[in-house]
Image (cartoon, rainbow, N blue to C red; front, side, top):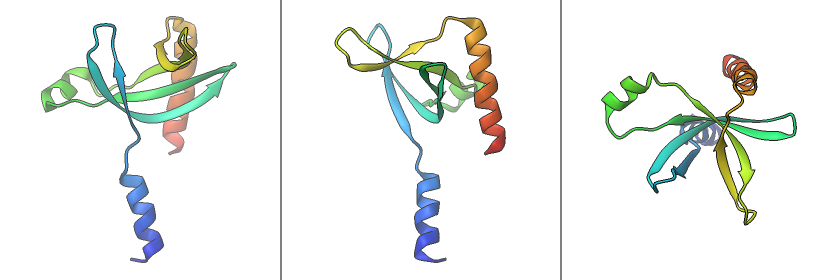
Length: 101
């Protein structure tokens, strides 16, 4: 295997991870599956990572969609999407992207 092939394989094996805090200060790890710009917003598809295998089974291995927003101080954060129509629209786009990959 060439040096270039090794670099590509290493990049493919490196997951893009992000940690999020909930309102109670609990920290959760997610893998960034994809991100898109849509209708003047920036959105992320995130897969939760778990410590115990049975937690993953219970979750159904589904991904979550968040919107990138700024808090009152201008700091970036991710917010849940409450608009069900928008959420369905984004899910279709992400799943189309997943199929292409």
